[in-house]
Image 1 (tube, rainbow, N blue to C red):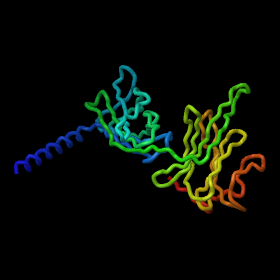
Image 2 (spheres, helix red, strand yellow; image 1 turned 60 degrees about the vertical axis):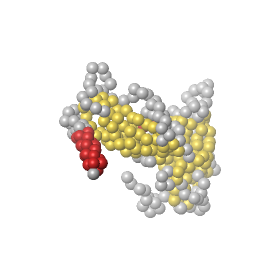
Image 3 (tube, one colour; image 1 turned 90 degrees about the horizontal axis):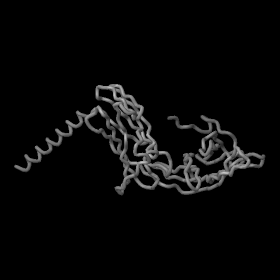
Image 4 (cartoon, rainbow, N blue to C red; image 1 turned 180 degrees about the vertical axis):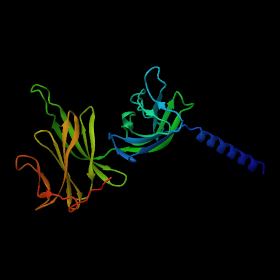
Amino acid sequence: MFFSTFFQRLFLFGLFCLLALSSSAQVALQLKAESARYLRYEIINLRLVINNSSGNTLIFSDQDGVSGGRLFFAVNEHSGKVAKAIDAKANPIADLILAPGESRELQISINMLHDMQKEGVYSVTAYLNHSRLPRTHLSNTINVEVIEGSRILERSVGLPSQSSSELIKSMRLILLLFPDVSEKLYCLRVEDDDNIYAVHRLGPYISGTPPQMDVDGSSSVHVLIQVRPRLYSYLIYSFMGRNLQLRQQRYYVPDGGTPSLSKQTGYLRVSHARPANEGTDYNLKRP
């Protein structure tokens, strides 16, 4: 009987402390991941919702003499090892002003702030402090997994140069198969011996025609992948400096054979196919 009463009191005391802590929360943080799994070196974008219930305007600034605050993260591998901060002084909300009762959603590229290049599962928690708040506030903790894909194709390409005497820079184009949570995806990665410059998700994998990748005379990258039994995605990427950006995406359906990339006419094009009509040949999922 004594122990029963003791534990009841202990439970009520813990509940009271929890309610008191919740009622004193002047800023609420909600952290969400766009996906539960990411390809290695892919940008990991998180969404952080900040709600100001302090009854006062909160100004976040790194300038001297200004009452400011800071947003930072704890990122840990499941082994317990800490994912090192790339810039320990980085403050993603240095210019944020939150009015009383205002809620703001921010996009945070977390692997631009912490080294998450290793494969594994990472736990991420956001922390916020401010000189006008009595304590540091923290968000929920989320998990994201980082894994490497399987290499399907690899090509080397030289970057166009503005000088005839400048050393021609070479880049590797790697087409990968990435096992996402619900389906396998084709991805394209651009790298050299020192850096990763771009990672793009191209489209879903199905068992059918093998993917094709080629480069034209201007170093634009052409990729053809089958995404449905009778539907092919044709993507063209162009270099902007060393970054690779999508310039064009079109859909094709077979016409007189199996669609393929061809240079028979002197330039890269899709042969044995015709442009697909949206609404007739396919329907895109709208956000």
